[in-house]
Image 1: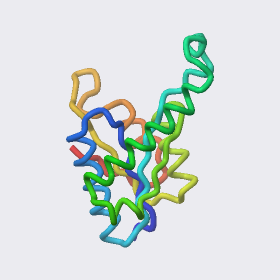
Image 2 (image 1 turned 30 degrees about the vertical axis):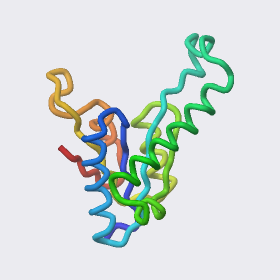
Image 3 (image 1 turned 180 degrees about the vertical axis):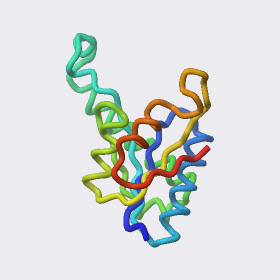
Length: 143
């Protein structure tokens, strides 16, 4: 039985993200588990790239992403279900932050999308593959 399900979304393809989110909600509802939804923003703070952004850029990006995440959840799951979802916006390398959020939340199951396969990815995106490889809990991949 799962007590906590973490759904990792890229917010790049609304149709794919909605499918992954609905599956994560279905799995959480089976066990009456908490549903957390996470999106990870890239971290430009440690590289020369950060010099091109104003100081408030990151805060604005987090705020806008959180709003987008909540809106997507409401559209895919409905307002009542969305009110019970914990929305998380993290910053860093996607797979590392997904695993950190899962660990901190006591996640029993991570739900992640496979995304469109490319030859170099060999049917799984690089972040999904890393989450699967390094996770200490079960990972459910939505195709």
